[in-house]
Length: 270
Ligand code: HEC
Image (cartoon, rainbow, N blue to C red):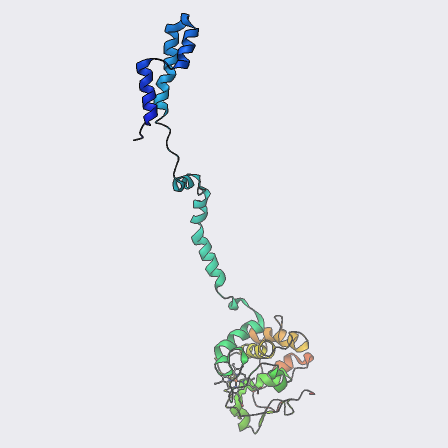
């Protein structure tokens, strides 16, 4: 317990034994008539003096003072923390890719390309040295100035062309050199089976021309074949047209026949 300092003890003992301190004695002397009354009045403070010392608690050590002075966690913090799991859920949801939500030929084409073409042609259309061609740097537009020739090539594949005696893929006057069929390996036929619809092939080709190749997404060809509102893509999806009769259904738009047999590629001029 707190020790009473020596000098306070002595003073209090002195008061009890020897009566009032000189100043108090003087005061008492000045009012002799009230001596009896004055004595307890003066004694009262005396009684207070002794207990007044000990209760004065020592100042807190710095750590305790800091603890008492710290900011308390507000009550609403608990409510806020309790919704943390909800927030986590929303955050994780936001991280999942939304590719499935992209619509139109380019949305479908990105999926088809990633799942069925990138294995040979490379992610991002980078191509493989000595193997499948790259699609970067507008390559598809150079090989196939008309999209119909590219659709036919992908649907029928290298072997059908070689068998039909057609030795060049696409434009024979291709800037940078014609692509000789079979010279870089065999492009497997993608059409004519249940695995790919005509809309799938159009989507992949749109991906190769506009996304991987980097052609500007505008102009007549883009609007007609590859834009989100493409009427040809819609017709292929709905089954109201196929690669066999597109040129008839869209005769007004000057569509070239795609068909189901290899045909020599057109040049940029026509
Ligand atoms: C098994 C490997 C393989 C797969 C899968 C593949 N390709 Fe090819 N592709 C090739 C090869 C090899 C060539 C070159 C053929 C040649 O030289 O005759 C080629 C050529 C092409 C060409 C001609 C490019 C040019 O500029 O001459 C196009 C267009 C094409 N592929 C599109 C596709 C599409 C679209 C898909 C997916 C639906 C696909 N390919 C999947 C191997 C593949």
